Picture 1 (cartoon, rainbow over the protein chains, first blue to last red):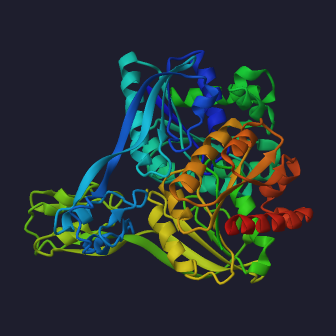
Picture 2 (picture 1 turned 180 degrees about the horizontal axis):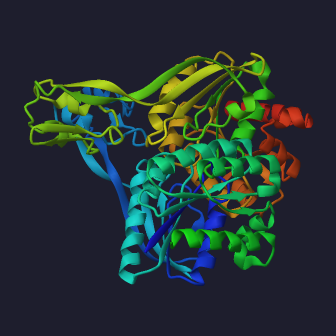
Length: 293
Length: 287
């Protein structure tokens, strides 16, 4: 069983559109399990038409709760909290749930034991059925922490089913950035496909996401999306990849057909034949050779 | 006035809107903060002159083994498994530590002091020939937590009283804690979206964060207007979220962005439009 993650550093370069197309193409020759690791802006389900089979609560961590009847408003909790999560009041203090990091410092310092640590539900995760294989995905509640933990939860569930069914490939659609959810999505992967666009931002962010995958020992390939938007930057990306020894797996042209397919709730490869669909087929061939090797 | 520019979905044009809004409002002596510390890009458009740079990090425990009795209390109170006591050894895992200080407060023999673990840098200077203050944070590769860098950047640069100055916070993508940290203390949240199912899905969550959780006024900029479908439009009308600007789907704009140029310079008619956007936000804050 192999694991492939789609990453980008910069957001909006087309990770999910590439992931959906690869899911379609891969499903024609392999047994797949799919996972959406972009848990605070999850979109893969919008183009895979899933049927939800299971819903699970996700408890990311605990949060402090102050019992107003027991609180003496002494203010010690506010003094020790480093996250400005304690809101003073005249008779009793209270906790700002969005600011609380669940560190329990206040819990241990409260002289009258008015604070307890309560399990907080930070999101949900789902197992769904799609025509390309089972999909594990999640929804982190607005503004919550622990997105990395939720990614890990989604990956573990996907991996358990993949092992049970002895599937060939787990395909993971990753989050943008280089922080905790990205680290949670990329560790232990057999290959990271980095979707890059030929813009000044795209080139800059490629260097940082590549440094991140290298740091965690994950081999990488690059796909240039909207490749004809700026030929000079596309050439720069190719030269940079050559210097770094990173294979370029494909170039996908800029075309509004990608958006049209998304509006229809489909991967661009099932939406119709065309240059973009052809480019995705070529991309999948190169990625497949590498990830299954 | 402090405006946070956010989006939920990545790549909808947050940085484009934030940068051009700042350049069209130089009379407000703007202060621009790039809070997308995982992938900061605004400097690519501003070409700022950086004048000051600081290393930032967070406090992590340093254990004095001469004093430590290996009682394990620190590990017991730590909620993040960032410190562990094994036999006569204490291990600290900086990437897991949230810097809460609970271990040092609870150590019965005062064997723990805190030291700074570097996580990134924050920088400030000027751009647009001195017309605006520019600042950004950059997280080190391999670090997990962006929030401490964003909060250090804001503490350093955002004035306590804006005194009529405009502060623009360019937010990271997503809807998790780094976005909350960026929006906190803002007077208005400008949400940049694209009129597609992906844009709409993530816009809904962003409105939940900004308006419902943080209680801030919000407004929307529809970028790449004309692609996609009517979903965003219908949502904004149903939720009473004002649409303050529309930037059409235009390959010229995509190319200007790809080059690292700004819209107000390359397509001068947009200077007026971003000025209008600023006034619409001002009205939104006042109402």
